[in-house]
Structure formats: C-alpha cells, structure tokens
Length: 184
Image (cartoon, rainbow, N blue to C red; front, side, top):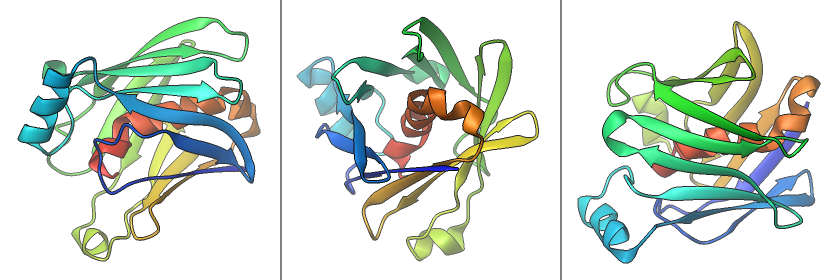
C-alpha cells in the first residue's frame, strides 16, 4: 500500500498550486485553472460545483501527467493522461447515476478495463465534517481510496494494489477531477 496526500482549501474554485506528496517526498503539483476570466466569473456567480474549472497534474519535474476538463452539459469529464511510458491516453469519465441524489459514482475505461469510482453519501458524517471515502474499483477489486479531511484541509489517497503504483498520477488525477470541487 502507498499513501499520498495534499493540502486543500475550503474553496473548490482554488487555482493555487497544491503540492502532492508520497509519504514526505513531493511527487507533483495539482493546479486548477480557467480558460478565461468570463468562465471564472460565471463559476463564482453560479456557485456550487465549478462548471469550467480545469486541472493539471504535473510530476516533480514539471511534466504534465494528467489534464482534466469538465464537459459540463454532458456530466462527463475528459481526461488526457500520460502514462509511465509517456504514452498519451484519452479517457472519458461518465456519471453512472445522477450525482445530485444518492451515492456519487463515475465510470471510465483505461487500457481496455472498466473502472468505477464510488462514494457513499452520509448526511451525519457531512455534518461532522467527516466524509466517507471514495473508492476506485476494477471489477470487484478495490484499487485505491480517496478521502478529504475538511477540518484538517487535507486530502489523503491510498493505493492498495502495487500493480497500480506506476499509474499513481492517473489515480490521483481522476479522484481529484471527480471529487475535489465538490469537497468529496
């Protein structure tokens, strides 16, 4: 098992760089951005979940490893990921269910395999600022989990399957793209 973490803010619209750590070693930076000020203004006026906020995840050398772009009116997230061999992979994350009611879930296909990110919603835990963990599954196998600790302003990610360590940027990126703006 491998542990990752990064600081967060209470504002899901942040464009400040978020340093990502594996243990105590910094392995990258996640940063949100808007294409232009008009889109940023619309997102801030509307409030709620950002519609135009994009993210980039760079490794410790400054190379872009993942880029996410919401497809707002389709409830999809387009991901461009550069794997450990620097091969470009296009991934489309699609909501499996209405994200506003019940558990959050989104599906994506990577290298011919179907993955699911699933997160239970608990009003009781939300009121105590402790949320349920989100989990990535390959079939019925748990690959990793993601949890935001609002009171500590920190996100923790655990990758359970060592076969997926080489895709750590993908796992960090898809969790972040799907859950961060909504505070998981």
